[in-house]
Amino acid sequence: TKILGGISPIDADFMALMKQYGALDHVDAVAVHGFPLDWNLWQIQEWPQKIAEISTVTDLPVWVSEVGVSSFGAEEVQLWGLRRTAELLLGNASRIQWYSLYDLPREWGATTRHREAEGSSYYRHFYMGLLREDGTPKPALEEFLRYTPEMGLVQWFHFEDPRLDDAVAWMKRLGVTNLRTGLSWADSFRPNALDWYDRQMEALADFDVTITFCFTPEHRGVMPHHTSPPLVPEEFAEFCATMTRRYAPAMAASPVRAVRASAA
Image (cartoon, rainbow, N blue to C red):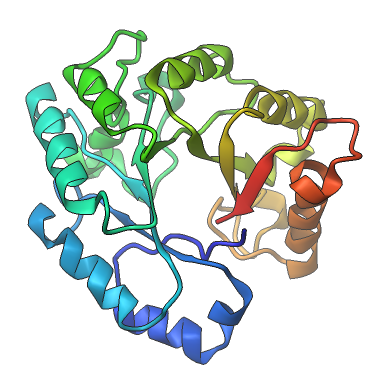
C-alpha cells in the first residue's frame, strides 16, 4: 500500500495540485496530520470538516496518519483530547494513528522546525506520549484501550533505541495492530545501520506497519538539514527502493521475515 505523505496544514488546494500533477494516480490513499489543541489554527470539532474537504478532491481513502494531544498544560487535557478525537474521527477516516506511545526524552531534543525560543510550541513535542519519559502511564493510556484496534499508534524509534522491546510489549498489551514509524535515510550512513533496521523491523513484524522514509543526511542534501531535498534524488529513491525490497511482503524470500509495510 502506498500512501501520500501526511499533509499539515490540511489543505484541499494542495491536494488538488497533487491530483493535477498526477501524484494521486500512484498512491492507494492520502493522509493528513492534525494537532488542533497544540499547533493548528483550527478547533478540534472541525475534524469532520477537514476530512470532508479532502474527500471532495479525491475518492481515495483518507488516513489520519498522525494526530495527538500533548499533556504540556495538563494531563487531563490530553485525556479529554483523546476522547474527543476518537468521537470525531472513528468511522470518518480509513485509518487513525495516534501520536505517540512515549514522551520524547528531553535530552534527545526534538526534530522539528520549532525552536526553543518559541516557547511552548517547541516544548509540547516532549509531552505527546501516552507514557511519560520514565515509562509510567498517563491517564490517557487507559482511555486509549477503548479505541484499539480501530486506532493505531505512531512511534518514532531513534537509532538503536533502547525503548524498542518495551514499546512492542506495551503495544501488544494495548491491543494495537497498526503502527506508523520511520526508517531514516540519514541513519543509513551510520555503522551497523542495516543491523538496526533489521532488528527494528523484526521486532515490529506482528504489526501492520506504515513506514515513513525520512531525514536527509546533511551531506547529501541541497542544504545541510534533515528536511532538505536531496542533492541527487535518485539516491533517496534507491534508499526507499532498497528498504521496500527488504521489508515489504513481496520480499518474503528475504533473510529477514517480511512485514506489512507502507510508504507514507
